[in-house]
Amino acid sequence: MAEEDVYTRPGPTNDIYQTLTHPPNPGTRVQRNTAQHGDTGESKKNVYRAAAVCLGLMCLLLSASIIGLVINNNHLIKHLTEQKVTFETTLDELKRRLCELPGWQKSGCGCYYISRVLESERKTWEESRQYCRDNQSDLMVINSKEKQDLVESLHQRVWLGLTDTETEGTYVWVDGTPLTTPTFWKNNEPNNGPYTSQGEDCVEIWNKGWNDRACADYNQWICEIVM
Ligand SMILES: [Ca+2]
Ligand SMILES: [Ca+2]
Image (cartoon, rainbow, N blue to C red; front, side, top):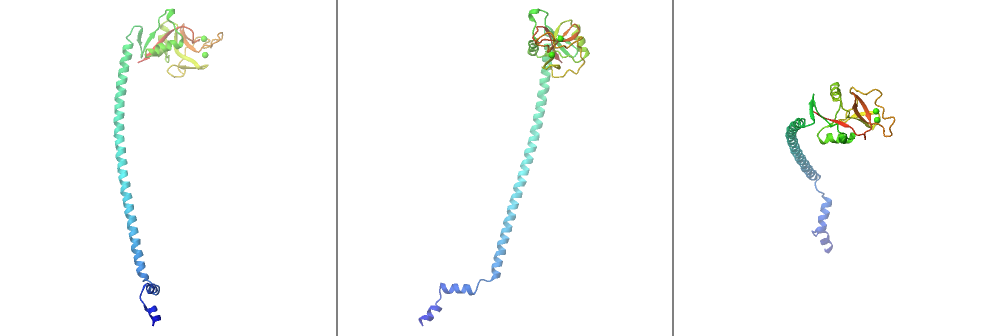
């Protein structure tokens, strides 16, 4: 009888056997898995929706930023344009007043200063140019026959704003333009001073023609303000 009690007594051991002999209904397991997959799909949709909303918001913010930048840029351009007009007006007024000072004279579209004849006041080409720059001008650029006629009419020997200091034989005006304008060299000039050791890299007008001359020589000069 004791042996029978062992095999019929309910307990954890018998539960295990029942589970092994009667496994859970497979259909139930499939239903639970399907429900789990449905939940996962819904979660993914929610994530996608949230991502789409975020992207939409970012696009809106970006568009608003671009519109703001365009508006600010337009304001900046308008402000700079107004400043430019003010600056140009002030500069024109300054040039006009400068042209009224003693020693300056207006001619055509320019205003000119011719240094005095006194030998003690003559300057090298660089010193002459510096004088012009200190007075809101530069050495004269001759880019037309009218300007050549003007400087010839002065009957002075003066430095012009033309040099080949950078590259021998390649002349450049002080405003940066190359010598492609009409030229008015004297006969046999420029010759780069064949009888001098330092060469001749700066240009003067002398007796109605251009001559290259040693830049360190002392000379009169002519400043120009283009109006
Ligand atoms: Ca030269
Ligand atoms: Ca010469």
